[in-house]
Every structure is written in C-alpha cells, then in structure tokens.
Image (tube, rainbow, N blue to C red; front, top):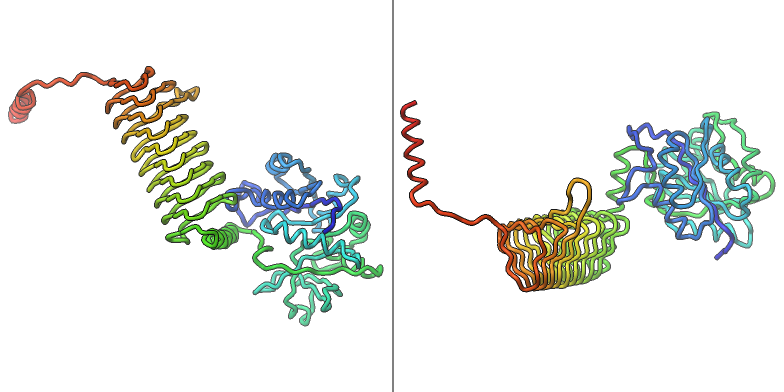
Amino acid sequence: MTDRPVAAIILAAGKGTRMKSDLHKVLHSLAGRPMLEHLIASVEALGGHETVVVVGSGREQVEPLVQKHGGTVAVQEPQLGTAHAVQQAESALAEFDGDVLILYGDVPLVSTATMRQMLDRLAGDDSPAAVVLGFRPADTLRYGRIIADGDGTITKMVEHKDASEGERLVDLCNSGMMAVRAADLWPLLARVGNDNAAGEYYLPDIVMLAAAAGRRSVVVETSEAEVAGVNSRAELAGLEAAWQQRRRAEMMDAGVSLVAPETVWFAHDTRIARDVTIEPNVFFGPGVTVGERVRIRAFSHIEGATIGAGAEVGPYARLRPGTELGPDSKIGNFVETKKAKLGKGAKANHLTYLGDVEVGAKANVGAGTITCNYDGFFKYGTSIGEGAFIGSNTALVAPVSVGPGAIVGAGSVVTRDVEGDALAVARGRQEAHSGWAKRFRDKMLAKKNKA
C-alpha cells in the first residue's frame, strides 16, 4: 500500500439540464446527503490531502460544501471537455507532488477501497503512467471503450462515437476515473488535442499520449453499480433504490429484522444493532443510532436520534434531531419528540409532543400532553423528574420543572414548578347547574318554532 500524498480532482462542471432543477446536480441528495459529499467522504477516508472540485456554473452553491471539507473550487469556463476540466485544477495543485485521483461528482458511490486499489496499482513495480477504472455494463452504448491486453495493459482507449464497429463489440468500458501522478498529469494534459468528432479535449487521450512516449497504462475493473452516474431525476431515483436494496441486505445480514424490507429507507450513516425489529414503512434520516432489541413499529420517521437498548418506538412516531431514548423507554403512536431525553423505562404512549425536555426514568407522560417550549422568539426547557406522572391533556409551559414522583392532574396548564411527590392541578373548577341543559333546549326549540 502506497503512502504517497493523495489529491482528488472531482469534475462537476456539467450543466445538469436533464435534472430540471435550480439546485446544482451534484448537490442532489442520495441516502440523506449530497452526491458530492459521498465522494468527498470516501476521499477523506482514504487520507486525501487535497480536494479540488471543478464546476461550470453554480459555484456559489457548491463552494460552501467543499470548503466545509477543506477543499477548493475551480471554474471551467468555457467547457471544452474532460481534459480541459482537469486542467482547471492545476493552479490549485501547483505545489502538490503526489498521486491524483480524477473522479466525477455525479458518480457518487465509488468506494474508498476502489480508490485505494487504483492508487496501489499506480504504485506497482511497473510504474504505469495512469490507472484507468473500467467496468463491464449490460449496455455499452453510451461509453468509451478500453482495449486491453490480458495483463490489463491498455492498448487503446476510444470514445463510442469515434470507435470502429469492431471496437464497439468490446464490453470493457471507461468510467472516466483515473489515478495519475501529478508529475505526469500536467505535461500529458498540455499535449491533448481536440481532433475528434466532438471537437473536445478528452481526458482518456493522455493514456495514448503516454503510450507514444513508451509509458504503459493499465486498467483495473469494478462493478457497474459502483460507477453508476446520475444525469436525471429518474437515474437518481434508480441509484437510490439500488443503494437502499444493498443496505437492507447488509442490515439483515448483520442481524436486523426487516418485516417488509422494501418499505424501509435508511440514511448513509444509519447504525442499527443486532436483534432490532423494524416494521413496514419506517424512514431513517441522517444521524440515527439504534441499540439492541429495539422494536420500531410501522410508519415511524426517525432523524438525528439515539435509541437505547430495548426501547420501543411507534407506530406513527416522529423522532426529530436531538432525541435520546434511554433503555426500555417507549414512544408510542402519534408522538413527536425534538431535543427530548427520556430516561430508562420512561413512557409517552400516545398523542404527545415533547420538545426541549428531559424526562426521568420510569416517568409516564399521558396522552395529549405537550411541552410549550417556544414563545415565538426563544426556546425553553422542561424537566420531568424520575417516576413522575403527567396526566392526559397537560400543557407544560416552559421553562418549568416537575419534580420526581410528582403527579400532574389531567387537563392542567402547568406554569410554575411542581415539587417532588406533590399533586399539581391547574384547571378551572368544574361546576354543575341542575336542569340547565333541558331549560336551554326548551327555550331554543320554542324560539325555532315561532320563526
């Protein structure tokens, strides 16, 4: 394994017109994060030292994400082909002396392992000029071909539109991704011409230019699924579906029970322990960790939450970011939580909103309870002590605290702290007026008959 410094050039200059979107194509989400961020994360896991993203239009959209990860944005204008696009990163990498990975922002699922395979092959004893990532698709019609010997040495690379009939019969195709030493890359790019059907400067031409100088290049292969690209919303949906299918299989292989696998949707970072059961139609947004023996019931939406061992969620529950459920706790049907921490064995079984709240162990929150945590300007916290019982239809007006073991009577509006083991009742006094209802009906009926 090579330990040379690594830079990544990610090409994202395509206009993305088929997406029909004001959002830059590479920022469209896959498994809960932008496609571009998938690639950047894989490069970071590799230990990449530099990342340059080459854009055409939409720099102002892409740059915040790139800068968040310590990268640089370069602009290709006009857009004269892939070789020209890579050249736009030269100034940003002028002082870089290492290996360069060339990737595509709309091909988001290239793994760190595949990137490492390319770099290791580049560091081989035969010192190839370039390593090209190839694949064998079911349909070759859109792709350039790689003509290679049995040992992987590339004898020719040709775009589909420029290929002969015989060359089009070859099923080894070019993903467009490469690994090249920086010392070789810039001189080769400077020699690329545009004498081809499209009049563009093609990146694959550097392979044949190196060959003409006596330097061999090689191909390494990966699966078609790993190099699947996105040019339309339909292709994005297809890639999402394929990603979800693989992740479901991985989850079940790891000991997670999915009652209806095709209805469960995971985010890129969902972590679930063994012996968890997930019922149909559950959606995980980013930032979810689930402990052992949890049961997540149908039609629940979970994002940014940590669920402790043995807990139960749903059905029809919504856990929002900042939720932490302790072991053996329970969030029931039509309960919504946000920045809510529930202790061991605490329960909110139905029809409740818990926001900016800490609920002690074994506390019980009755149906229809809400924490009134927002005054239109600021958020405030609520504390419910261990073993407390909150009666149904209670409004806890934050900031407020209910002590351990306290009981709040149903229908109360609690605006002051309740001490431990106390009973708090905050509602209007019930009055009954005998016969009033009958007298009212008689009066109104007589009025109606006169009309």
